[in-house]
Length: 392
View 1 (cartoon, helix red, strand yellow):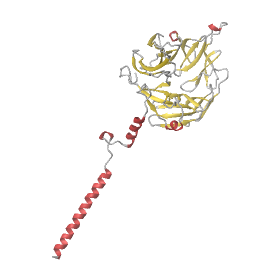
View 2 (tube, one colour):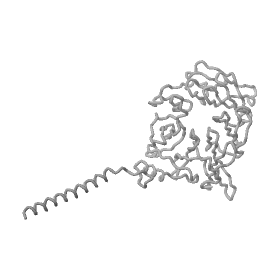
View 3 (cartoon, one colour):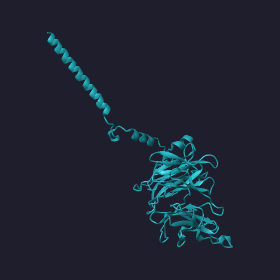
View 4 (cartoon, helix red, strand yellow):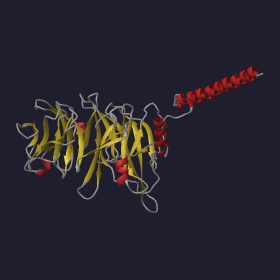
């Protein structure tokens, strides 16, 4: 009898141990279960967070495909955004005006969503081949080179009073292109060893004088410029850095030209002369849009696929009403790809428009509902050849 009781107690203990062991294993299995991928219906922390951020992105008032780009440091101080420049495939520089003559500047990685503060009162113009930054400092006409790693001033460029403020630096950071009353020059960054590239044409009759202005390095060998007459751009030109060759584009009268990777140029006309494509060899011009366009809101894909510009429409009713639209056109076909119309009276042009290096998006600034100038991103897919986007 006593043996039977011991046997029963032993079996009960064994069953209890087995039961506890099973529950412990089940809990351990649950704890070690790997997180499911987003495709399985459970979002990972990073993926879920990014999705929520996309959902929170505010659309533009009438350019419905454009979404607000939120930069936390700028948002916290409620600053305006201007002077947007790409300094990489996904990196941009922006300036934020504060009080009169004061501004904050940032580099922003749109992929990592991280911002780096630059020295105050600097405006980035371009990134150089060695990753240094060419910037405008303080008042108009003051320039410097910032170190690409520390973002401290590596070299201040002391512009002589005889030099026009509209100068530019070569991509390798070795030479400046600048203008004086004598013409267009190239020299080192201390304005030493100058080489005259294009003569100013001075006449007793001031209406017949010509002055090269607004130099821009296309690469380390070529510089574009405008030849200004009395109140007009007579033509645009491209000159080699040693002055040995100077090609003139007569079809770029009253225009600015912008280089494409192909060697051709986009021309943006002043005084409502529209947008065109200029052959870099023959100088022949093909019209992309004959329409009147605003100076602001213009950007182009350097790969030669599209241009985007803002147009102002005037409607004469009982009281004159100005409206506007943003339009995307194919460079090669000259066809309208998409447009976004505003019905709001007195619509102001979008500003600071700039295309990404890969041509997949354009950034621009505009006023939000609070009246603050913020940054927007508009993705451009040239395979979607549908006219009339959201808001059209």
